Length: 185
Length: 351
Image (cartoon, rainbow over all chains, first blue to last red; front, side, top):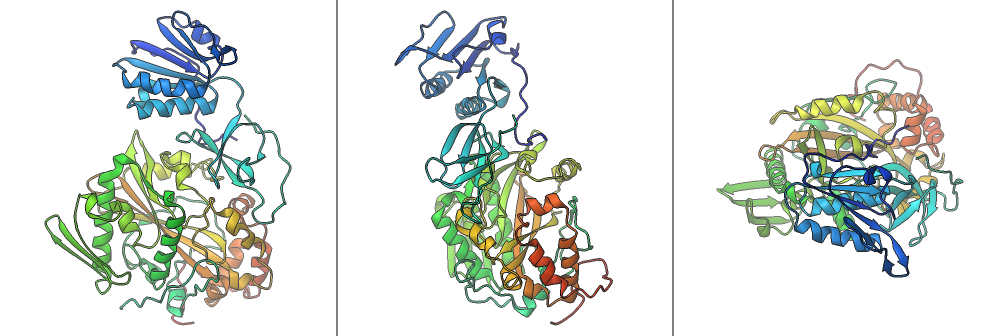
């Protein structure tokens, strides 16, 4: 069964109508299809070589120490954006929609931002009760680390929150918690 | 007929909510046939229908004061139950105008709107509100215009922006929802926010409904019904607060099911707004205890047959497995096998 609110991701492809192309990824290396892309592509990655030390930058390549460092700099970069800039967010589902939302917040048009999933299909889960975000979830039921509710992960995805919906599973009879199963991709 | 409002009832805690005989007879019962399945089931929202609940454009009933007090409690605890995205400002004023005009026209003894250019005067007697404000200037109201007026009208509301060939839920006042979250769904398009509903996608219901709604014309609102079951007459059956009210579902027993279990019906209205071209989606909920509903013979029999023969996926989606058999057993005691007419009218004038 498909998840109606989960986006369908097309393979990476350069938009030829753009003049400047910026790929942002939460991965250490851009996927091979990005490396092979023709044209002048800037690539931002997340990669360290020692604690607190980013991997060396190279022509068109800029590694950051974390997603938390990368995304605010993306916002700064987009504040100076010129017409013709295209953003390609590549990586985990949570990351690509976080990056997409940064771009929208900077005033880009939806047609100027592309999202491409890469890596395992783990989910970010939003605790509907205490609003905590839980990263890298791969099973159907997880305890919220903040409020303690055992959350069932619904097949319902919000691009705005870049997360799936988690709702308490044993509210009716506390402790009546079904066994967790692996999430379908 | 003048509408008599009851003093504030409670929709939580001691649950003093009750329906008078008149309120029972005007209930918008949702099952015209003995079998229920999802369908587009949209019809013009014109005055008049099987019961008096269809007589006004936006229906106010005897529960008004307590209903609005409960909304205020919910908003005080969680202000994010009302959110509007910034580009929807025009739709907010559209909504305020539509609701003020409708209420003052349908219930002049309770609501009065006086316009002098953009200087408006709004009087809501049941809630003791007397407001002078400037239309189009949000700083002249104590809340944003959408929140201001939807704090004074029964039912949840969302405002839907039309663009890119679909509708986006870009604002709402949602304090009495059947297990969906505005804070989670805001900004989603039509197919996304309906994602969790079973069966209907595959049947093409949402594709057809969307095409219909995209062509909705100003001055020609439409409506449809939806329903679910609620343990106790609780308005705030939100997923956010499910940890606080979920246990009430497990307390339903064969002994208390008639008193506590409520049929919850939504009369959903869709109205094209004139300036913004957005759609105002009204979700007007009505609650009736099974023991109240069963005083109308046709409804008791019809409801028994619908719940007994419901599709398993709908039973699951509506959260019924725990107490469905109690409902069937309770209603079976009324069902003498009489063949029922199609339609939802009560077919009796008194109880």
